[in-house]
Image 1 (tube, one colour):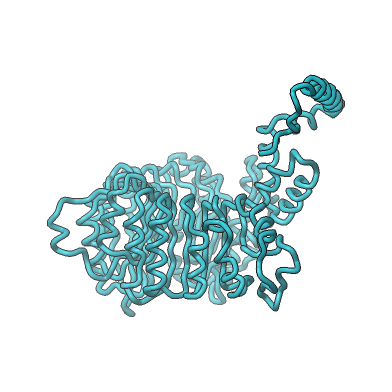
Image 2: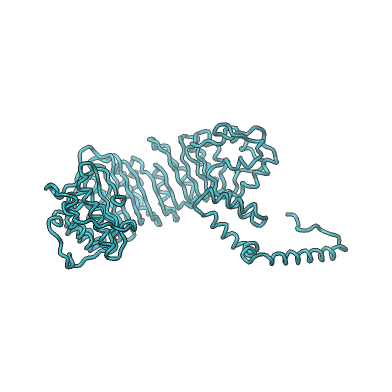
Length: 565
């Protein structure tokens, strides 16, 4: 580092000191002539960095870059921090090429290609910016760097990597050729790695294994590769990392699952179970525990594999998602799986549960909700999401009441075929509910006006704000609205299905929403989306008489929100 002033002889040091003192005094007097805000930014690095960081974190990316560039060109004290933030996150590698002399490169079609050999001066310019980069995203779907350019960059006059301070690397849709360029960026400082290869053969597996040894501090690993072969997976690399906190990957081996279960830092895990269940020899050993796991997402092709996993491992997450495909005979398989869950999962920690089943047999499968009773052990459950293809849960009022009592902290719920009384019981026992999806048989409410004097014991659920009611047949929107307004006065969003056959009922449900908005406005609340509700006189007359079909019927097609009507 150069000294601020040259070194003088002994006899001249006094004069030099006097000149420096005079120069310093003049500079100090000039500084104090500046406005106080400018002075603070100039002399307090922490304040300067905080302001620049606020500029960097703004939403408009193009405006952020222009502002940081303007700051970098303002004065020398701004140049360093502004350039650091300007180059901190790159969504492409091309900007680093474009900062080099234009005699070196040119754009041919969509690619940047070199026209001559890189010189030491070119590399010196490159090194002015490369050490600022902390995050890099490269997507081979948008080719900008030619193959010859990558080869030229592979031999810098300094030790690799090209970006010595890189902490996050995302490389998407890369081919076997560009995968050979990934080692150019492999830095021991990398903590986040996101890879989505087009192929994952022996070459790519070897590269990833090498990366896992050269980047020991990786904590966030995301790997996506669609393949029907279970032999193509990143299990070897996973077993080399001991600081993982978040893992999203495809199929992994049994050995990799055992390794992940021992990590003291793993908080999030998403993976696909191999089709072959955990081996018998492994199951004879002691049960493994994911000690600090908070969120688990498991995909599998059979309940047998999932059942073996739950028998072998004990988990205590806040959220669990089980996604099952190609399941057969689900009427018997699902109850067995649900019965296994309380034995393999801690009761007190689980707050959110999702069960998703797809690719079932062609015949419609229906199971009574009594199979959910083992889940009542999870007393702190906030959300239960059950999604299935051609699969129905037959709810009854007794099970719904038991569920409401078992899960008093429930915030989101979906069910179908319940009576208004059961719906009221659900709200009564679950005061935290904010969103429901229930198919209610409205015939008892639709047939008789409710009493204006504190119906249903004066129940008024203040938390519920969003409801999905399907599109069951109703004839008197005012009565339905009066019921909803009485038990859920703050319900601002009502969503229903709609199709050609149910236009008449969809229109009536729109009137229910408008009436609910009107009542909210009159009671001092705001309508849906904060808009003023419009009163419609004689709503039943406007709609016209309805046919006398079964009130419990509903139509199951795509749904639409009445909020936009």
